[in-house]
Image (cartoon, rainbow, N blue to C red; front, side, top):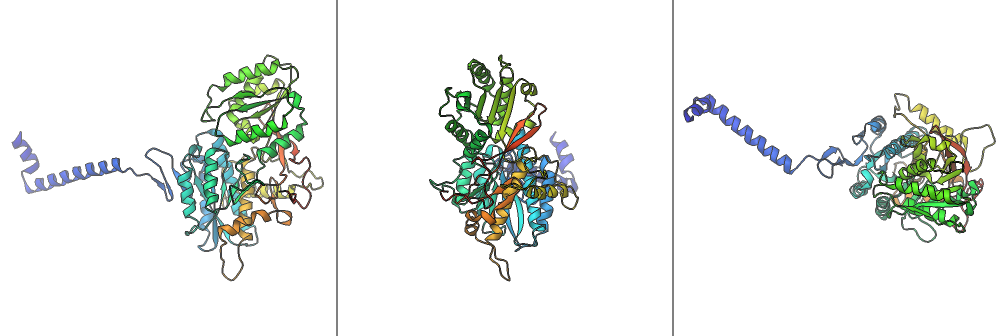
Length: 515
């Protein structure tokens, strides 16, 4: 055996050389494999990496990286093309921070539409604003599923303020969760201007009692304002209303919506009906069992006909399905809820027949494509058909090869419209704070923050979702709230615009002195 090995591997100088090379290759391969096992390659793209092997990619990118989400590829390519046109020293960067790699279908749709809306405003700022400076560079910041990696991404954003990126604002901030609250706290604590798109929780906001998030501006009404607008629209009698509320801790959307509804129902004779959603509110859990019981209890009331629902969209769908199977099908029930209702139209688990059994679902939308369509009537205060048409014209242009395509876009959930408006706030804040001169000098982040209280009156943002008139705490004053009804065919039908103050703001759109 030994002689055979010697003849095969060591008999001639050539075989000796080949054997040595073979041994070295094997050793190198094993060494490299061992190194890779101990030190896996976690990079995804420039500025983006996996927290650990097999995890999702988190970080910040403006180079066309779609974070392994195929639906985003067209719009991220469009962002890349636009960013590549910019020259160093002529732009400021705005980041859109979202849970881009969420596995929830509704959230993925939301993310797509928000990115599309943000890009449209970037394009408008760079091409349709009479060459105003600075130009705007757009980057996407992924905080991961459930925003669980927010800290990694926020730390990266903080480093981008003084570096070549010239980060001057962060938009997005789209979910009212504990992680979002922490992220906003960290960003604003570092002085970075933040513009929330669809956060509505009252406790992720500043106000007369204090500004825990200095530098936070919002384009969406708070849950309290949504609830006031819904109540004014519905003219609901408290004695005929029941509050159904989620008791899961840590969800600032449901907690503040619950409180806002409870404040409207102080004289209601019926105690709230309680349920507890799973830790992951997008999971089905066992809440359908509870909703069957609540539906029976509603049938047991004598005259209740309105349900204020304080919960997320998965549980809302389950509740509507259960209400459609109630035994008292002869009684009419109207479900009123916050902007999470906008997800129902795309939820294939919704039992559409429930909406034909005397169950109607109406919700406070953040924006709707029919709210500001030009009807030929005189312009209304609080918004305008012209501002909305500017947005839709951009959307049409985005189908052209030199701009887009940006992927299939739906406006019915309002997400693209709101993201477009949030970017408009960012752009106006950056440009109003920019000092003129022979050479462009970008404003400090503190100078951008100082612009938020000025965005009112003649300096209001004429958004596609309505006027954005910020009070001294960065909250939109008396913002238009489209009331939308879910039709049996799944379409989201615009009903009318409601206002937190009952009537639209005056032309000057100035918040009262108490703000």
